[in-house]
Length: 209
Ligand code: GRF
Image 1: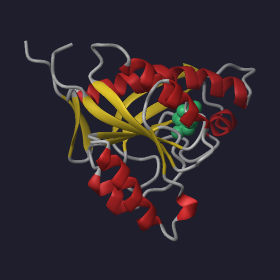
Image 2 (image 1 turned 30 degrees about the vertical axis):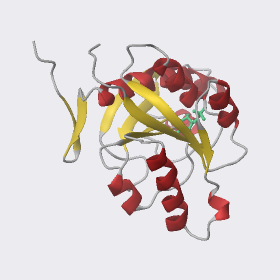
Image 3 (image 1 turned 90 degrees about the vertical axis):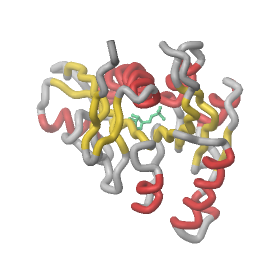
């Protein structure tokens, strides 16, 4: 890759942080175009915090329960993001709905990973939704964050087969493996500027010869 400075990325989590760990691992490669400068959680007990700390990544807890409303929670979140010099935000199992004004501030600079092939199966329980719908292909999506949940211009997707005897757990495990490959690739594409937001679409900028 080229010698552009690495983009400063904060990862927001609420839970175990396996996608966060895959981003940290990718960013450990010398030529990866982004550095994980902060992992922040809205839940003090999130398992991902310990994983980040053991990888030497600065962590912060902005406990939503300590704030009287969403806006004051988000002001505190914005403060820790600013203090870390954050350029891009990756939501990775972050279980808080963000207000339109927060999303607007980070427009084109905030990504999320969702465990389905959007626009199918929004919300929770995506693997059960896929099994119930009888689809033979399922997967995951990285998209720019917009105010509407699990929507927003698609940056990248990965598909996995749904096997006839799949249960929610077996399908979830197959999708999660795909997530761990997809998110680092998608972040790299956005961090280098190969993919960017143009109006309401993600566009691909071909490399110059
Ligand atoms: C992942 O399946 C992700 O797609 C969804 O929440 C889950 C988080 O898992 N948004 P982890 O905390 O990254 O292990």
